[in-house]
Length: 186
Image (tube, rainbow, N blue to C red):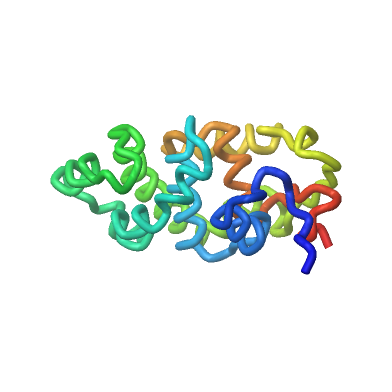
């Protein structure tokens, strides 16, 4: 059976290929899943995505299955426990920002009814479909990710620069950047 054509960033690693084939670029409207990607993308800042994917289940366990209601209530003791958890990225600032981001996430839910309505409102509720021929044509950020980042920061989010936001948009399917010859393009 011939290999599927995939975006070149994910080939030859099962965990990457599975993520690419099943999640990357697939629209996510569920708040808990949107929060999961928010956590993972903020921890990824400055690191490779494969590092995060390999630790994803550890993050799930450490952060109560990405339950933003629980994460927003973490005590200093829980934060210290996370800082010593070798299964995740032990960056104190990112861990603390995850707690404050959970609080900001819930404030957006209160204002908009859910986080999904807020975040998808930036793209009119539908994915932006790009048509890159190669990986080089995929931007690290865009004017839209700049705007979303700015708005999230204004609402109290941390570790949420434009590049993190664009990666988040790709991960949650707000933007589809599968290259032209990728099987996911069809």
